[in-house]
Length: 93
Image 1: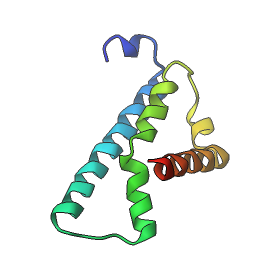
Image 2 (image 1 turned 30 degrees about the vertical axis):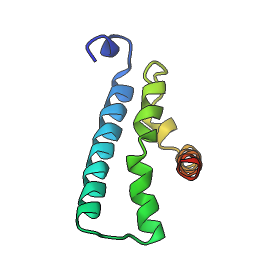
Image 3 (image 1 turned 90 degrees about the vertical axis):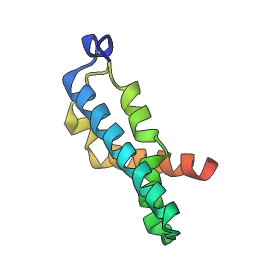
């Protein structure tokens, strides 16, 4: 990480940390669901799976040297495209 922050923009570093934290929390939730035999409905499953499949931190790694402002990443079109890409990854997985 020490070498990465030398070339990564601050917004991209923050986004990676946030998405990785969300990923970790979702994996913990998935483990809790499994240990409690909790079955989610389809929408709830997909919401959780979108976080724990690891795509968001992977995407954040790809943008580390792109210096993209939050306005780009948070634009509704980009958010939708990201969600659709993750859903395709889920279906392929």
